[in-house]
Length: 418
Ligand code: AMP
Image 1 (cartoon, helix red, strand yellow):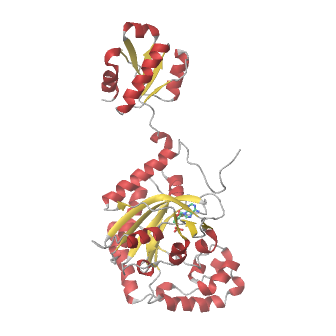
Image 2 (cartoon, rainbow, N blue to C red; image 1 turned 90 degrees about the vertical axis):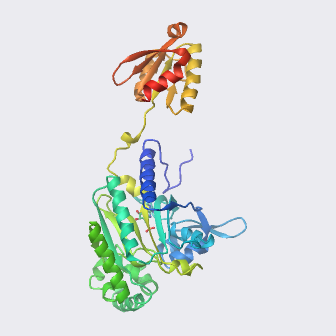
């Protein structure tokens, strides 16, 4: 028996209803806020991710599914969506008419991480990106959107964490100060952080290894190095969130794992998921569009971890499953044939009807109708068929109604879809 790949999973009926509900809720909210859907491929040239995410990040260094195709081109299963959305924005000149564009996309991502609860090798993200707006208002707008989505999905126990990572004008000074600080801590750092120390010292700030956290307690703070423009930007983000009534926590260690972020970064964290506390994360990436060969347009976005969101929504998947409208219990060959034809006719008109394909007793067919929680059952035995009528029973009230066969489809539809 061939099993699925480690770190991959099936989403089965019974849980898929929750995924569909989240997808619909998110798409509705995005459309209310002026976002359009964009669908991007799940594979890109490796170079796109290496250049945008950064060579020295965990993702590019050790987590990508990269392989040569039959002609030897290096391809990668996308580990995140932003790089592809930026590529599409540039390639199709989506900025030409109006540089301000809002996109969302939902789909699978691939990272070869160590599988554990809340961490998969194929996982799903809901992404939103806004291009062409430098104003800190959109930073607040995206955080507001995330919080609103959580509200609509009845997710409680979430908190917005925000930080500023500065910009190319002020971050180098901070990086320098941090490198000097880290040089005095080499003996205390984990091997990953020791390696990152020179090339990507910011990453040491969010290392989860207790010894590293301990060593970083008195590390220099990025906030002391922010330039006046970055400081003003961050202040406006905070003031806007205050005005919108969005609770947040400033978290100076929030640096996130991708190189392209500038200024505002944020995460939605929950206490409900143990170690994998980040449900969503995002931030500004003002330099990325230009770095990938596009115009100098600012941008900001976020990614929600769909798998993690599913774990914490306050909804019961059983409440989302729609039972059939009608189950037809037919006895005898002629009745069964008629029931099959009616099922097809009703289905065409939007009524979810089911039949029993076998030749089973009325009792076992009624049992199955109960098991499926059908709202109505149509009973058509040989006697009823001979008399040209069938019985329609409302399973909740137990009321019964006789229905003439010659206008069965119309009569059933009128009764069960008031
Ligand atoms: P990132 O693109 O790393 O910023 O991740 C954004 C969000 O995607 C995270 O906050 C997680 O909720 C989710 N995520 C990232 N990696 C995984 C994974 N391996 N399995 C499940 N969810 C993930």
